[in-house]
Image (cartoon, rainbow, N blue to C red):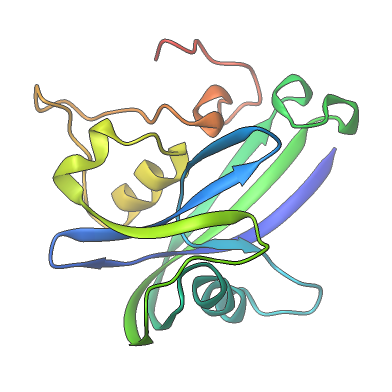
Length: 168
């Protein structure tokens, strides 16, 4: 089983969250700024680098929020022949200290934008967005006041690595 370790940042200002739009292999969704850690790179440095690459913003990290572990079954990967993937996602809380919002060029994301937290239930996003916002003390609620589940790719894989019911 392959393993991928990545670092991400939760950036919420004035009730809005910063999200880049991930696009790869015909799949897409709004996600947290972040990505894979380069060999020898500290996770905190990776989070800061990825935010700059994907959004144009310089950030400072405030705290480590947590680590999420997920197993994506081979059948749900872009290339099922690569087998299952164990993802370790290190999540930080951060705030913007400079830069200007811009879209990434020639990367894994094609847009970046701020979204009102209240508008997230209608947004096509990966599950990590909800997981990380919960780590930061935010809850994403639907119109009935219930905690939502994201409709993105990663919501199709349980923490155990089994395929989940897509209707959840």
